[in-house]
Amino acid sequence: MQAVYLIALGLVVGCSTLKEPAIPPQPDSPTSLSAVKTVEATQDKVDGKVAAAVTIAKENATKPAIVTSELSVALSLLDKPSDSELALARQRSEKATPADYEAARKFGAHLLASLDDAQRKMETDQKEAARVSQLKDTKIAQLNADIIRIRQEASKDIWTMTGCGLAVIGALLCGFVSPKAGTSVIVCGAFCGSVPFIIGSAYFAWIAGGTLVSVAGIGIWHLYEVTNSSKPYEQPKE
Image 1 (spheres, one colour):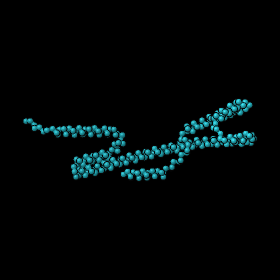
Image 2 (cartoon, helix red, strand yellow):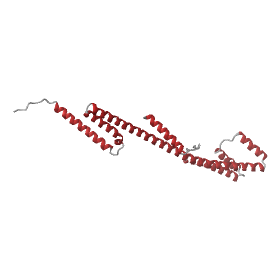
Image 3 (cartoon, one colour):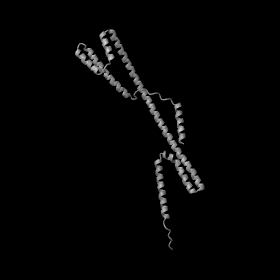
């Protein structure tokens, strides 16, 4: 029986795979928008402080002390440049031609635009990552619900088959052994077959309570019968 259900589960999963669209690949990006916004806000704050320090240094070009101090503030907010970048900047300063400085400014503007494009792409990837992650969570929840449903159906069928088997055994007992014994087994079979419906019923508490009361009543009645039958027989007095 379990093998049949495993085969059925495989067929269900296979059919659903053919019918349902595949989940797209999830971008390598955070699924939370707050994480992206936090990084962007921190980077914007650093960029603003660097730009402010450099602007003040430019405005006070005739005051070397202020220029040096403001540029030191800007450098404290930046990473240490590589040796190749330092060599390129020194070469540019030695030549000090307008063309070199214009080319450097154009490169900076192009690099800033590229960073803005990369930031917009990161935001788009974040939204797609969140969407795909939600699809995966929904799929996992659906698969878990299918597994629970199949387990419940398997348990229900086991109880049903047990009830049918007890009913057959009870019928054989009624025919070949004793109607009383066979009837008891048939009643047990009927109870086994109804167990899944009793457990899933909204009146489970009432049914369970009634069953316990009935069993207790039968036990008390049986005890009473046994006690009375064990008393010695007394000859009635004339």
